[in-house]
Length: 295
Image (cartoon, rainbow, N blue to C red; front, side, top):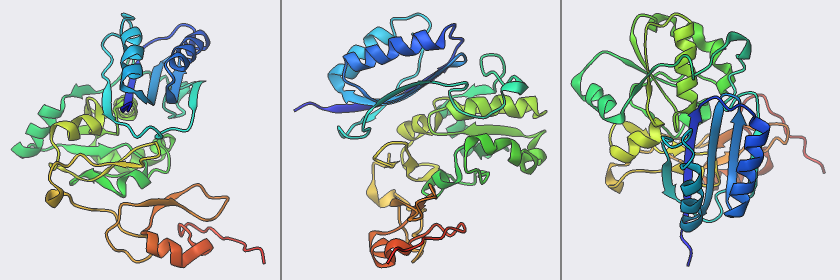
């Protein structure tokens, strides 16, 4: 039986012809029967996909042979064989959308200092004064976050400029930006520096890398992921796992995501199977949604 593997990686690097590079990636990924998402822009590449361990290894053997990408940090996890429904390779203006092209926020030029998970772990346990700012979307925070971290209530990463005022009090403090695999917090760290923040770090490799090294420590709950798994748990001891999510209806501990039943709403919310079954088509995210039932 084939074993499956999911990999996650990104790199900010200047790509001269994104369209040509995207076609090369598409052909290579198709060759090895990979499924997932790859975003390519002049500023770099951001990818997550699944395949058999053999095919993923064959792809990486070619990809990492390119000197431009030989130092890419590959994050790995056990696959299911159905984490993604299809292969998608797209060219975009940014590999993670902040919508600030006019502000010249280029992580190849400006970004915070990369902070290894080992140093963050040391800082957390030393009592050093610093502030973790979580640059993920608000629904991702619902099932997992660093204890004591600052959680801007963003629906999308591109909302960050709207929340910058709420972080102004940290301008002269030590700030560590975090996100899933590193791509958002690297760009966010550059944006904070451009806004006058003086001492900015980014968690190198993202939360995934921290949790791999320190399961059951500091990060509470599970990590939201953008595939059919929805969440990853890194805990090695079930008795130490703390569920931080709550069912939207009954408010009992829960880590199960579902979608708002309003067809015009794309919000995800936490719900236990029992409550979703009882609520039926009236199950809403409480954001002003309204379901019109057809009788």
